[in-house]
Image (cartoon, rainbow, N blue to C red):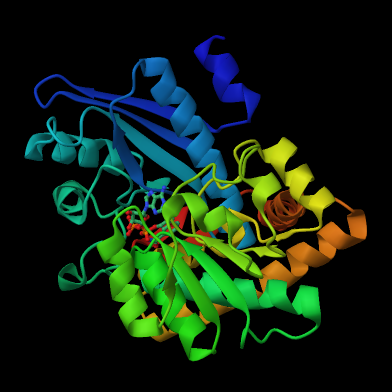
Length: 369
Ligand code: NAD
């Protein structure tokens, strides 16, 4: 497929190829849709086998950000960047500063952040060249670790799913199987323990799970056995693609509500299987948007309480998504996509009233979109 065909396939607005021979930078910035606001999304550094793989990834990820921001009720569009290279070997200061120059050249149409393979330290170099970077260190006026916000959104989203299932959103006495014992899982488990839920937790590094067990009286489960636990809720907080042909038939869970990205191995196929099995699936990008909500708050002058309150609105979002899915008898991820598209279309129409002139006022001043 030609490059333009690939870009047009999912209606991306702009793709920027960035190269700096001196710093060995090869990066692609994807801007999917800026109807709601500037395109925000992290910069991923990865050893792509081919340049085409990097393009496919940036197109897929930037489109995902459009939906995530839209369903989270943010005035942001979808963007993402990829840097081709080995994050353990190929990084240097000039690479990230060169990348920052390219981001700056987009004059606020794209705002970057850290992602897989990049760190807060890398973003500090980017920030030396552009103000269009977010999710930076607290010491530099940023919001720091987004995990508590992501976790809070997952917790309230899980409650919303429980409300759908039982008519009550209480998690007291409910059994929850948590996959992964990392940043997000730790905070989720704190909420669950406070509510009196029974937690089963796993991690490929057992010692990470031990910290959670000590704080929450959770029970340890071997990583291979987590899908078989007889629990009410499965809370994936580790890897993507864990809802697949092999795992779903083993599940006795009634709800899936977790922080991991890209949980469905095949969106259409496995979303439909979950619907047919009667498992309530809280779509990943809707329930794990707390971190994005948090960094979006940085753009408007950061108040952690405000960000947490907004993350709490994920409860209503999941309720709405589940209601649409039920009414239309469609998988929940489709319902979530619908909600996002409706918001983009309706706000897009409103913005035409002023003949394309709209303002985003935030930390960066006024950015015409
Ligand atoms: P993390 O790296 O802190 O934790 C992930 C944990 O999963 C690690 O402890 C790792 O050892 C464990 N793990 C990996 N493979 C496993 C397996 N097969 N079985 C069991 N455990 C396994 O990451 P995190 O920041 O907690 O993020 C967790 C997930 O949530 C990721 O998919 C991430 O993309 C997604 N997410 C995170 C945030 C955030 O704010 N941190 C926001 C949105 C989405």
